[in-house]
Length: 470
Image (cartoon, rainbow, N blue to C red; front, side, top):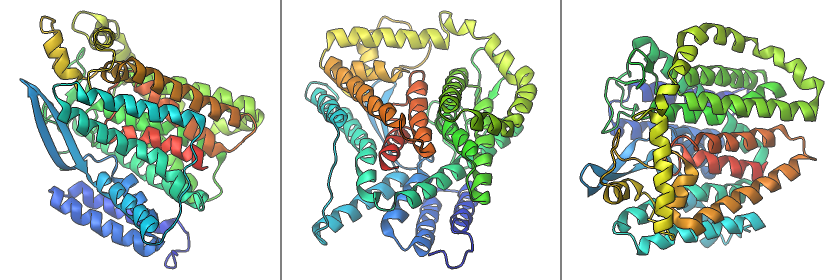
């Protein structure tokens, strides 16, 4: 493997770099498909393993929500959109390989469910039940299939890759680092031009301006969105990954090239987070990093403090961006809780979620919240189009019912209890990074509609799976 490269990871970097450059200039989905096939062929040439090739393709294309998009109209101005992405194609191919090995080669796989995982099974059952009661059962059914696809990441990754876990984790970290660097560079270019770059891999969206996003409270604020549909989605993507690369930098990886990749990923991810101008993400990531540092300090004491000198550039960035973006952005925070402010709107959605859970204790069905918002609260005034709750717990409560909410909550409580009990005696830095990355998702999902978001939701289950794998 990697006979053409002295460094075992150089081949992957070359392949990812070439693919990212080509994607930047791809004029259509057909060309993206050709790049997809070419990168897959190249990875298989390097790895000589179809499962690893399919998985790394899935991970590489996950941030790009490109593919075949379908729309199901529900009521006026409300439709359900679902995209079959290139990441989906990769993951279904991976599952095909798995089932083929099981049927043809009679390979046995053992599912090791912990007690907490049975709460996840209950949650899926309660998420499925409302399909029988909702008027838009097709939407709920498709949304349930999408939920199953995301959760399957958590189930199948430890099952498939348990034997070569360390090598796979290194490949995964390299792929995530390349994606983070790319989004950071793309965000800087958007900020410099004050507009999207107009490339196919950028998501404009049906209801968003092709000229980019500005802050609602301050029209002079241009917000970078990377290749995502909204700056908040970019902030969520980088915000999930930043805590993990923060830890990787502190661990001083033995391979200098990998250490450089991790450092660049953290730097460009942090810049992208700032340029997204997403205040909630700024707050969540700052809190997660502070908790992570305190946790590491209590575990490793002086060793961690000595490594913090590597982050002097953070203070330089703060000096630059505090007067330029951060302080002015926070100066308008109070206006977000006025009648038509974003904060007030989010609180209103949570209140309506609670009201719906009382009226429909078994749930209204996955992805039915926007249409029910119109039909049940038609007299309410909306400051924007009806959208899902910008809070993962409110969304689960309204759409899967009280039992679905409790089962999801118990799954999280018992799963993280298992994780933290194990960390008391385990000093594996990878585990700590995966743990805080998943916590960052939950923090960000408390402010943004990330539950079932096609190119974000998978990362939560990915990091839960990687924690179990490592």
